Length: 211
Image (cartoon, rainbow, N blue to C red; front, side):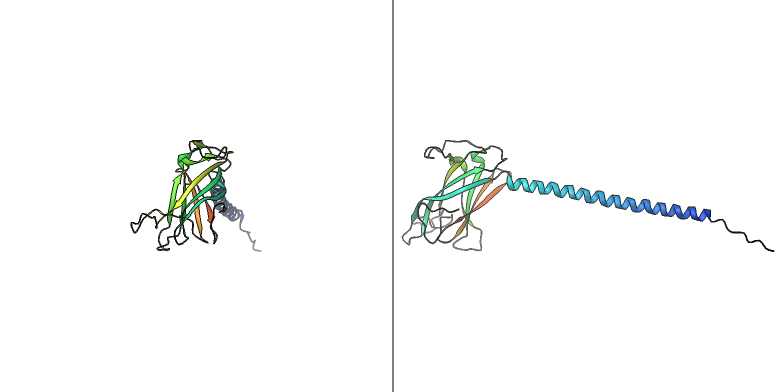
């Protein structure tokens, strides 16, 4: 009678277990790398979002209102010059800033060629005053601070005399009937700015609110 000797499978089982263990280690490593990379992206994106949110809130000029205080028309009853009084303040969390470092510009579509760069009037806030008294003392302040309200009168008019008749008739952004112009404030060299719309009606006169 022949005896059947069963093969010893313990060795092959150990090899299989080792292969499975190595595979699990590799899979775990891949998963760990994916999780770490994903976590880094989340933190990076969160930081970028926080920076964007901070730029959207802080370092801005908040405009309370803009009103026409003087306006001049030509012989065709078209506006050629206007003084606009802006009431403004710094947004919460903004650091104090010298008035000459804050610039303003009013942008409008070119009348001679709407597809080209826009016309503009611009300046800074050196002429800004506090709202106390009559607001006529342009040396009233040197630094803008949070929690205080300021007034600024800007002049909007053409900047060029194209036909040498001593009348400015080109460039710049005087009010124009039923147009919307852009009022923009930039905070020094920080790259932070805020924009507001100046909306002109079909009829323009002193006392009209534009924002």
